Length: 414
Image (cartoon, rainbow, N blue to C red; front, side):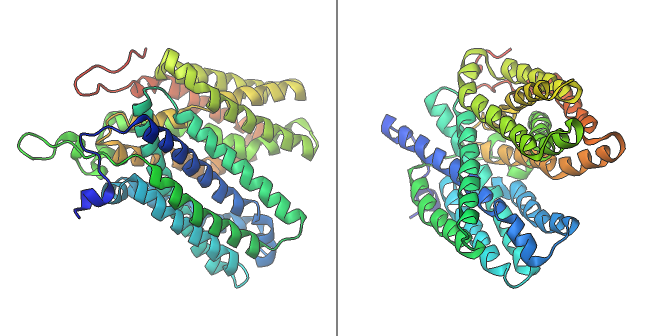
């Protein structure tokens, strides 16, 4: 059997309605599972820290191993998908991530080094998994002829909530980290590779008349030289920075800046996540009606307004309004960026890899930047950096306008 046949490359036959519906469910499973596996480990970080006797700075360096793993995998994601296809990439990277979680589950009883190895594997597997499921999600979106990527990303949020709640329950009943994480790893490794078999077959790349590589068949690494791809990546970076800063600093800034009790600070963080998840779920209808550029630009303005209300609000209730606007406004930048990077299905893997890599740099560099600024102007005021980056993103959102398909202009998208 040829490599293309083994990968299930799609030729002339188009998938049936039933196959597309099954692929939608499988894509939701991939996104939910990705959120679940990350949150499962995150829910046990305090116990891992205590066992290894790590200071806050030492813990930060240990956790950096997962970011290094992700940032290693993301630029390679296009090449991996080109070799394996989206379905096999997700299935194999699920196993890599699950093995990483299992390594942490046992290794933290031994020392720091096994935890570093496990975190790198978790980050690497999750990074390539992320690119592949976004590429496939965009393929499903094309077959549906309507926006659904934001709902897939809402599924990721649901997975994180499920993983966090399960972790809290495991802590409450006194279940050990080892048992909890081993069960989570086995569950993910057993279930998701089966579910992703329902993915749509991978698309066969188009060839030129002389058999030579067309622009769409260039090396995935060549996508780093495409101006539109880089601009889409910068838009995603701004929204990723806004999302990461909210996740990392809303709780702290409510407590330090508004004098809120710790429980209220946690409620502010929950409000941010809830607003973002809800906007992702319902945002697809806005995209179908008004187009990417208008919706993303408008939401960036909403997020800027939310940050300003949060930073300068006179009272805590007003700050909660700002948090809700911030979360809702931040919601669609990342998923729409994935769709924009996937407009040309033959180039989708490489472009999603580039855009995701640029976006994830914000998750890596954002927390230290806000922390550094916070040392000088307070954390609350430091969050104004979010508004500045989003204001810049407003000016370059036209890069997300859909590309023409097969010589036919893309949808109107002002």
